[in-house]
Image 1 (cartoon, helix red, strand yellow):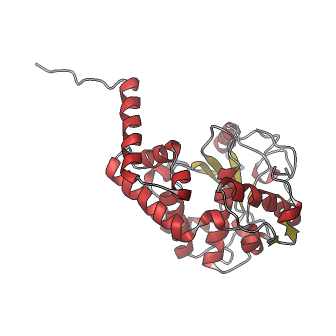
Image 2 (image 1 turned 180 degrees about the vertical axis):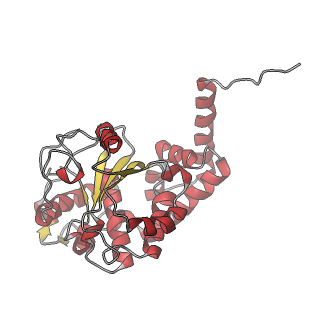
Image 3 (image 1 turned 45 degrees about the vertical axis):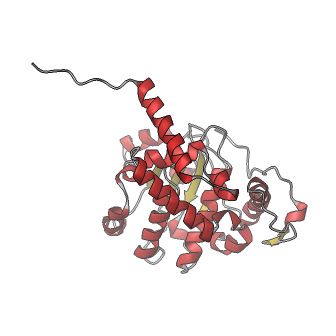
Length: 293
């Protein structure tokens, strides 16, 4: 009387998904130049995953990203253009990885030093592109650590800027975030969060973790994400983190050469990058300290 529903098998699901990847690639053709380089099979999978494998929604999302990248040109942003935004270390790429080997971006909203919405966005976009460039082979996601030391409404970015940042991250960098740790946010942050969380989609929302240093469960959660020996003491670990803007600028200048090479750009190696000539740097990145995965 009651028939059992046929159960999907992993092999069937995989085959169907790979068929959608090929179908979406065909729908985007012809692609050329940077768009072709951007739209790898892994990239197409991320957009399909972000839209729960709904073909039409994923296609629209990816096409909008291609339009955005063609005008915003994130791969052309260079450190010397955004270095002033990073002088206080409000956002930087960590010199360690999480337990799964993913790149880590450290954010310190309490060290906000400018009032330019566009400057803040371009700085973060630059560091997103940089973190992606430095992902280990086979790894597509990164982790965010947000330190709320010295945070206040005076140092916080405006609601509109936060909304614009969230929009760019969710729509143009889908499935790039593995986890987000909001470490020890003050009570005042709750009012800001009540507004901002409505801009966050469900997939991203599930990756956000509120962590408090006096909460045992929070500390155990951090241990599942990070090795305490690599984690800075600001986040409950044993390592010491000191942002050195000059050293970080040297690292970014080197990575700018890698970026130009990856995208096959001839952006003029004679550009001065925050005082460091691109002619005098190696293509391989320089670590601020020994990396650990």
